[in-house]
Length: 415
Image 1 (tube, rainbow, N blue to C red):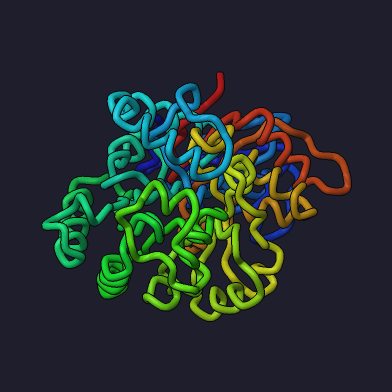
Image 2 (cartoon, rainbow, N blue to C red):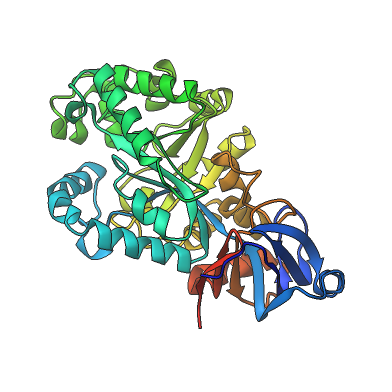
């Protein structure tokens, strides 16, 4: 890793895609003290900074680093349960958890490396009680670890005790972290966290000015549990008696105060109609779109175009290696591009700046602009067609990154 402190470096490539503005041929980024100092044509940036170190990437394009709005680092793809219905897959996951936890350090380290090598610079990771935070922190990426909690095994078993426990745990996890890495709370799901614990956690995190993550409206089985108290999840979690609300998961989440601008909701695939989209838009909640996981686990297609038209902030997420094929966020984005018939410009924004907006960090990252952190990926591609952004996305999806830069530090370089 190259130290960025006190240095001025120019990164230049055949193409530069800032995302916040148009593509630049023979573009360059001037990096100073970990942030972007200027952006433009290489000849102009070089003339204004003749003493800066130059890193030239011929035959490549520079684009913002991927922002993964929902991931799980704790799994290794070789050990995962077979795809099938969501409840069948989840039962297989539960059966494998104890053995998987023995390899947590290795799995999370390898997963983080895979993401970095694919050009990811910011990740929102979710793991039980924040178990993957140390490995996110060591990866070189910036990001947040959302600590999932399960009230029946937390604190004194009461909602108040469970929330007090996870708030204290997150505070403890936040000590001694590198800059740009933090810990926050995740209300895992409507079928694992009771309404009062979820309500209290949402209130406490909002009072603290912090973000909150949740899996919401993911599967048909979740829909059945929340609305009717039936189905595969009701069978697995038979002691969780708070289902059968008569409401869709989104309406249920809104009714207990889960939905707010600080909330990032992953999946939103099943039971999300016009009324639910209106609620999501009104509440200001953001969405993490994980199309491969949704497909693999028998969930519906998230109505992302309609959500975007309603003004809902949407970013891309890979989910984990037990529910999806890789932690390459650009690969995930290409699935969304084909699924929703997006053009390359929309896809590239979803993978970068829109993800940053969904997580509330758009002032720091997500595009290549002066003042933001120098977070970007270098991809081997020389686009020449009518949709150059799509060509860049396809190259990143297929081959990963030649180099990944976070806060001006080169955290990955393919030699």
